[in-house]
Length: 166
Image (cartoon, rainbow, N blue to C red; front, side, top):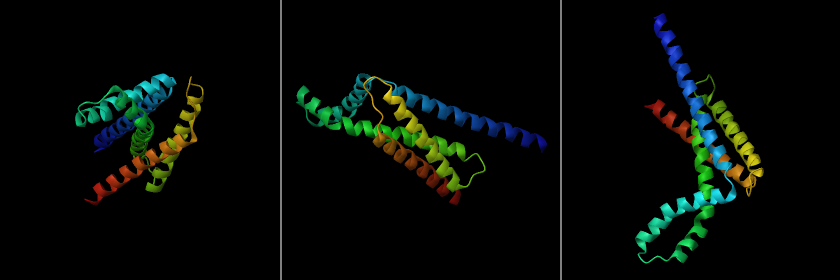
């Protein structure tokens, strides 16, 4: 009996450590994306648009000109960039919330602490961008990031609650 508890202790510690490492790696990814100069970041967004929306447009409109693709890029750049903010922080919210589930916290505490951790990281990320060539820190991005993380946090809470009901 004592051996099982000992084994369980190490398993739990390993799981918590794995979750912490995932969160740190995800935050490093966010930092690296935010550390890109404006032109590098734009190239990345343009590449995403070309591979997704551009290819869909080319498939549905066979004789697409380069000018039409340029217009499409300009039209969707803002949406793609803000969706990326939302999605990246949605994933961070999922990761932070699942880590905090491992501790003796109420659901309300998990939600509040997770949102605060993600929001504080978003604020630090936007401050960081002030010092990156061609980039700026935007309050609007903090709001988008916080909304994304909140959706991720509430989503995982809903999934876990639904799973527990079964």
